[in-house]
Amino acid sequence: MRLKQYVLVFAAILMGLSMTACDKDFLDVTNPNQMTVESFWRNAEDVETALTATYALLQHQWWGGYWAPGEMFMTLEVQSDLTQADIFYPIGNGGHNEYNPTGNMYTTYYFWRGNYKMLFAANQVIENAPNVEGLTEAQANAFVAEARFLRAYAHFQLQQLYGNIILVTELPENPDQFYKTQTAPDVVYAQIEEDLQFAKAHLPADYPETWLGRATKGAAAAYLGKVYLYQEKWAQAAAEFQAVSGMGYALVNDLETLFTGYNEFSSESIFEINFTNDHTGDRIESQSVAPNFNDWLGIWPSAYMKSIFEGDTTAQGEPTHRAFSTFVFDHPQSTSWFLGEKTFEEKYGPGHEHIYYKKYGFHNPELDDWGHESIGTNFIMMRYADVLLMQAEALNEQGQSGQAAALVNQVRSRAGATAIDEGMGQAALRMHIREVERPLELCNETNRFFDLVRWYKNEGGVRAALQAHSAPHWDSFTDGVNELWPIPRSEMQANPQVVQNPGY
Image 1 (cartoon, rainbow, N blue to C red):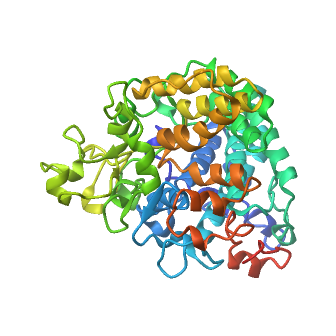
Image 2 (cartoon, one colour):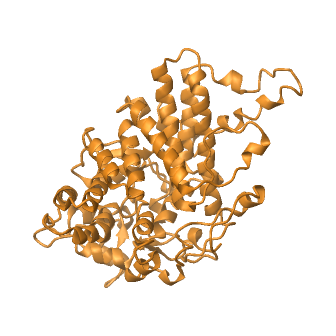
Image 3 (cartoon, rainbow, N blue to C red):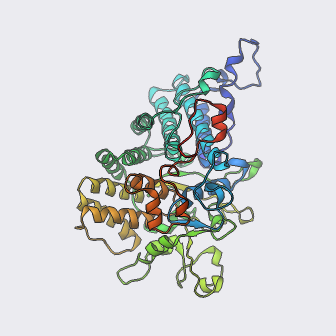
């Protein structure tokens, strides 16, 4: 059984497992058709089933609809200064691309709910796997390590989105334990670090082809480094990224192939979310990033992103391989499925100002169903180029600017871009990483808004950074408020202990 093919098959199993054991005193009769905690956790296959259900929650398949994952990913991207939209309402109330989310919007609710479902599922594996008969200690630890990686991932997502979250590290034993107070960020980060440290110690380096997509030692180390980086623990972050560099990862020669569905789990991929376009049995395992481009949601690179792209050139002054792989623009060599047989000018008319994203904008007949506006291409959440740039940032902040610039040039060399001066100073390199290299390499990959918050929240404010880059609707951003989303209203109604984020 391949993880990619069955990520949703068992998603409902875990949701009911802990709801039956507490009823035994009421009627001491066992229903042979009712799954319980006691009847489920029998062997390694059951644990793998439970883990599969936990991985399935990475897809964020709300509404039973395939387009929700694409909207989820683009919601994160449209918040930044790199991407704009005609009507992309998930971050704005009333159908506008503005920074005014509310606690009753479906995005704020579904992100919260989806990640807490993942925590619930992961905690079941963590608590039950060590007690399964027939497992060695090493096998049990490996299973628990996968679940702790996913628990760390979910807590990290929640922390970045909502800030003031509830830490969940155990299964509730009675109704009162469902309602907890929020947890200080430093305590949340400490738990995330502990989970990732355990995961790194016990996860394998790789898996056989039938289980590609499961968390590895490299994924745990990369995310641990990222968590350190976000806390400005520069030395610890650099050490983790250096460890990842020694695990055999490498930049692929052709950047474009990472986003086509034809080069999944490549040497550059560290962690990616599995998707197929399998609709059998009313199952939906697809996502819809590509149909968001130049379509009914109308998403394209901002004027700021376009200005950076125009400077991404070879020594001969031509667009780089990275430019052709990332964007669709007015150039004879720029192609995409949505141009068809037309040139850019024929499609959009002379003097058209926009460029368009190309990442994930590919038509793979084996994985895609354009009639349903869905694709089966995996979504990469962590890749080696990102690790190199995060390591460069961590080294530069420690005054090791020469080593940091050399790492940046590794990424630029693959892109076909001219090298930067490895003798540039710390301040200049800091701004290059922030304002040029990370946007060019990682645009449309969900990182940018979180980067802006961690860099500028205490350095002049995020609003000023958005304004400097002429980000769409920058003037609707309120410092001290819009760095976070509001806690969902439904959560606050259910749990009176929860305090809303400031300004909402």
